[in-house]
Length: 230
Image (cartoon, rainbow, N blue to C red; front, side):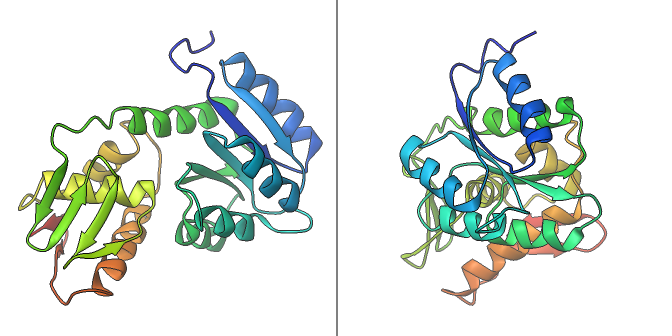
């Protein structure tokens, strides 16, 4: 049954394999999304500029510009959710993609149900973001919830949506140990089958970006348990 709660959200599918795009696009449209297709990296950037999609489903292996370069150029100007399509077992692609700013990844070949679950989890996370206050802070670290911005010692930090929501979750649970599964449930949704190492990757990004502006430690590793905002 089509998802009646989605509305006309637009997904840009970047895929040069006609067999995959002919399979994915009708399924997305059946679920209530509008879609467009780009078959090369350059076409993807052109359509992204022209259409301002709500989500990008992005294959890594593309002609002209590969998917990771497309992702880097998108991230230079936008925090739009991006799901990477990676080759099964290619861990380096997944880590490189997350490092470049992807919000999630899916390994090919995949079932449409898994793709839809990941897409809907991303949109639920974004739509559920209804702040009660405009500012959250821990010592010199602040999140502006209205602007979705972050600063430490009055220096602004550029965060992806996933990084922002993860930091928000840490601040809202400050001085409480969060396991990796707790963090996955809060950020990606319960029942989301994402590798727990992904949490470590994003915590590393947050620490690195914060460390550019301060020597203060904010996210502490609790050995054998998880992480804690202190």
